[in-house]
Image (cartoon, rainbow, N blue to C red; front, side, top):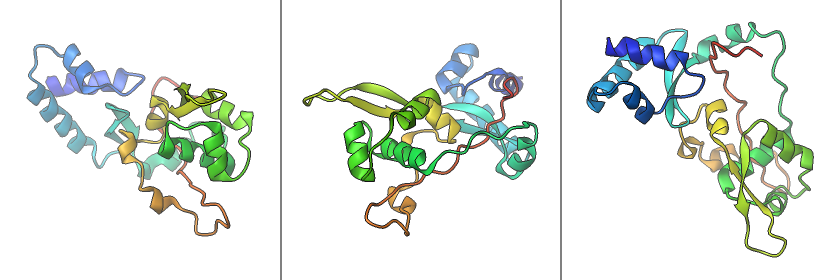
Length: 191
């Protein structure tokens, strides 16, 4: 019954459920029993169309990578592709956070437009962490929990080593690239 309850809670949730939140719903169940049930669910779904994954510090059912192409057909419109400049900016923020727009521009070797920062803020992938204690007090940017969720990461430590992401064809500036966001299985939200 515990495994079924955990499965139902995770499936019904709109966001990844943390272990602590699961434990609070399942009191007085022992933590070790919850871990065992999560492990059983991971194994049960390992070779299925959906998989139980730990992302953004919680547990969530996600479409298996082998099924993502067929699931994408459910939505008539594809999400807009991200421009190279937006991906580069996001990668710099992810790897260098907290960072300022001037620091991003210094790494990219080109001005970062307000629309790029605005687009990343709108997608809730980045947030303003505060202000740097230098003249002008520029905003410090960092990634948001939604970034981890959309890119299928449990934490920033799950980012690939930055040396693996270097573009061999970049000329004077070294440019970073991130993969496209992963397709999550959201049962209630179809865009």
